[in-house]
Image 1 (cartoon, rainbow, N blue to C red):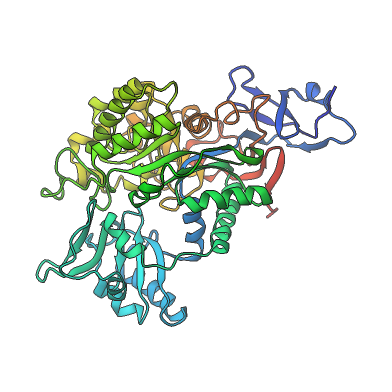
Image 2: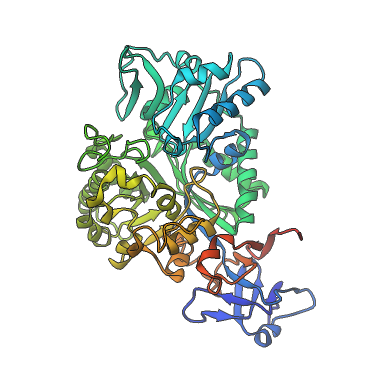
Length: 537
């Protein structure tokens, strides 16, 4: 009998496998789970070369998977100016001023995270505000949702954005009401006017961002990510890192961070399970609307707090349908950013047409975010086999201002995880980091309680959409694995699957709901190898 190279004993192991839901020990041979059972049964696999880890009663769950984040963006956010959570424009500008004072002359000052919804006066900022603190530097800062840029006058000049510059398709240049001049904020596809002028990062810089992000994700218990929008050259970088043994975690890549990359979609060949199943590329990402926080999400009826605005569509339905047909023909998965109810309906309509035209055995088309869905459209997800790739923490971040955006009548389809799950829709959960925290236990807490970390509101926001702990954990493990065609490889602690798992400081199923976000990983294993151990306090 082959002996294990690693065993874990004396634990509380939650497998998410109905065949053996709980156990105390687990054995690994190679990079796969060999057996999950009692300590006594696992001892039969222990040999002279077996490493034994005594869990001392600690809890083990499958390695968590993030179905939607931006890996390099997360690493980049570590090095750039972080404006998240700042409650006033004055403090935001103070931090910009400090960054400008430290920077070499003339280089770009970059960052992200500002949110006017947190400020006392919830209005978009202006270039003039930045001009006063940014010196001779061009400066540009993405909004927290990544769907707006706040730029100073030097950045606008670099992009040649003037009074007569037209709004690009799928985007909007905000303008001063009295003069008509650009005021420094650009929405959705208009952001490209600025982004294309920012110097591109070198390969070594991108590699460093991946490492920075990977270190943080492994420490949070995440062993796999689905990277929601990469450049064509990033596919080669990921493959190179696999060959070097330097890609820190498993990556499932979606090509195309914005619609400007459309010509590149079908140039790249699919890559499945590269190396030790560390990297896969078989998906495309497109976007059809903006974000709710910047009032760019496409709604069926106008915004309740902006009656002349129903949002932005960044892609025509015909184009989406054409891309989807081509993707289905070539064996690619299509993942579509859609936040508003009009955007979600358009995607469902176009997916339906494409699936009828190109019958496919197992397409697993996805809608990313699906934040506001008409209740009439919820059953269509299941009927068409569409995966709802959602981010629970968006609900608790957005809940202070969403009622004003939508009014009471549209809330029935807002962040409607339970309604979708009750309609037998496949849920895959993620964070959208760096838009939100990458910590999956904050996402699990949001999914189960629909409260912020101060436990407000009492009973949860729209509490009928709360999930059970098991439902939420499934969406962060098996649900994500299914969304990437990988349910036979990961998502549960089942013999034959990859030995990706996380050891916790407390039991996810026993800890009070109010403490779910405080759970802390003690150890993370990837393919049976310890890749993170929490230092003793």
